[in-house]
Image (cartoon, rainbow, N blue to C red; front, top):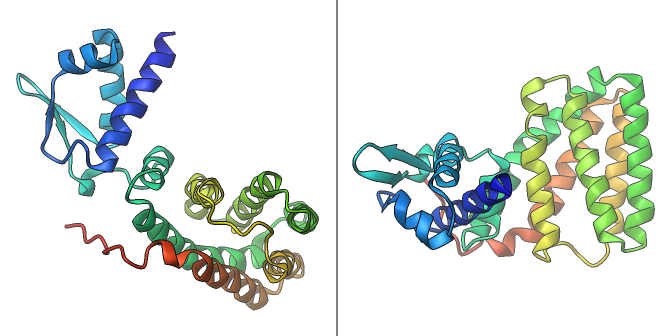
Length: 238
């Protein structure tokens, strides 16, 4: 029960901070959080430790729990990504993540075509084939699971451990697109084929073709969702 309450407090406060309901510089008092959320002081204390590790708050002795500016947040943490996608900042977050994917994933696909182990390349082909079958059937939740697995495999197959650690980040943006109705009811045939093309190029050690096919996937993604962020200002962190 204590662990569940701790998670609920982290979720409640994290969402408020990310949404701007608790702006940078705001001071929270532990006793007020305790009373409002009806939890013990120890639960609040543990939740604050988690939020501090995410860069969202800084406990100040004899002052309270100070909310930190976005420049201090761990913007790559999946929880923060999920909270941002679920808030009014959805467009800004999706734009930033999609631009990150556009920069990283074509490079990862190119490296995978050179370095991927044979069994991983074969698995990638199998996942791409499953995606095509499930996508054509319009089973979006199954497609989402396969899509996350596909892109995670490409990152891992690159042999670059930094790229591989972005799997959680990319998983969150793919979930966000589906959860907020930003995926077509049925994935486009061209998009399904491009995933097969990426896998085929990686298995065939055709680095330039792998990069090109992944770049086309990213360009299609931007075209499908950019209307969500067209009116949102860019974020410039100091």
